Length: 598
Ligand code: GLY
Image (cartoon, rainbow, N blue to C red):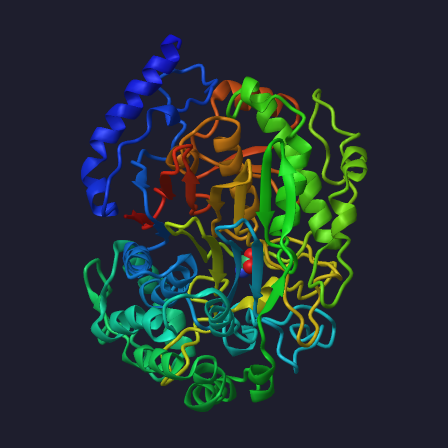
């Protein structure tokens, strides 16, 4: 162990002590961190005092089960369900419903998501409950007669922005197939939270204040997401959601029928009619989540299990890993110029492919096998050279797919038998379309914006859409959500995922490598500063402080455009299984994310 390692170890021990009070809030049981997991990454920063972490936070360790999500109360619900004898699926389902109450910005029943499940025997399943374009949707629905995008951001806010929601059907299907507790039991915590109220975190209060004007615009009948007077929400205020409690009770009593039929459906359709939305009863009747085969491949001795299309996440993650696999990343060190260069070049090529080839597999042929073929990837890498940056204008691969916003939410679960669930769900934008279904009390998604609303032309974010992801009735919009599970030697090793729109894939990529190559603990891996490149625009954005000045100079000399940004990238909620079987939760320090174990 050299001096740098000794320094790092002392810093890490000091930070564990400093974070002790925070840790007490975060976990129900603390287990001594096993000595063999005192990993070190080789940080090549020339300044030994510089920290590569966004901030330091203590890991949560547990022997019997662990839940990590965007909100402390939702994670606690997950662990309470595990303690009642529920399995990881029960915990995941209960937590998703709880998130729809405590984290209305992204937790939802009016949106959709993806689930990757690995059972205790190692069998894998993925569930696609992504929203679908309504039957009355059409390719040019957001374009005027001159084929220009209509004013008003109609795919982003308001009633026309919503796809048919998938969350309730998906959660019911997952629970029916794998749950142990009753449906009534897994719904009850969310109902109680909606009925009795939940204390807003500072972040949730800020979020609601930020969308106040839009909520007023789209909801003439005031909703409880606005305060009664003009006062702003503040941390500690209690948000009670009686209408949502009523809707959740209907779902508890009737399953999917409590949402897609009867009173809730009636209110949803009335809301659509009031605001010019196009979802019909037929769309609701026809919505069914789909079990799909996971995308599975290897990185060295690790098996990576991730989400197939209509998410781009699994294919893109595996392509990224395959591109960097031959390089000695560990030896080069975390965020060294060489490590960063091959990661950026991998991202450039993968996002170019994503844009050209990926869409809903029920509508377009997705050449999954070809995109992951070793010979194909080798050929794709041939024009890479260390001496200079590649040029995104020259890299072939087509056009970038639709932009995905950053407001999504991820949670990870593992139970005492070793069943593991990785689940990412979204309304798309923060608080979705900003439309609250009057009388039913939940927010609708604005997922239609994840389609390319005008193929071939840059959207509002300067990104270009494509044909594979063009709008069609009943089609699912392309996603970047990347719920992922990793195995080592046939045993569960990691559960990974994050929100973050197009940065989801690169965030999962980085956290995976932080553990697999740079020997970080899961909490360190999650806290480490991140960067992102997505082919177009041809620039790398990074969280301020992610690179040393020397590294930035070297990369810029080769032609890389490196832009520091104040905004954070991703909110990872992950689990690592240590060699002795202890679970380590890594909940992102960037927000309210919390791991709870027992
Ligand atoms: N709406 C974010 C995504 O699906 O990637």
